Image (cartoon, rainbow, N blue to C red; front, side, top):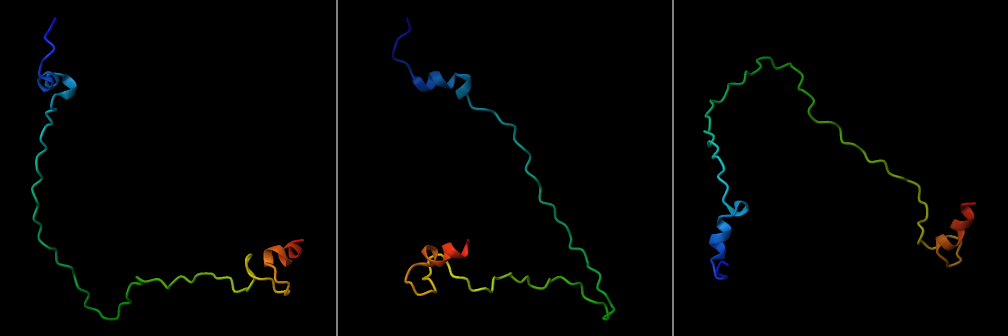
Length: 91
């Protein structure tokens, strides 16, 4: 029977699941230096510019002033609209 005292780290280092994986090194990419290209400039000034900006989009808003659920009722009963006239207006 093997002795009970042994080095756990040494034993586990021999196991395949704990062995270090040798990954192949990827070659480091060399930075490529490119020269800036010249952009041709238009000599005519009467060209129309390209429309790059669009007109702002307007948000559609509800202009009707309808009472909210928790607003006081307009009939003057003192109740909330949801417990008073809302029930009769839905029928």
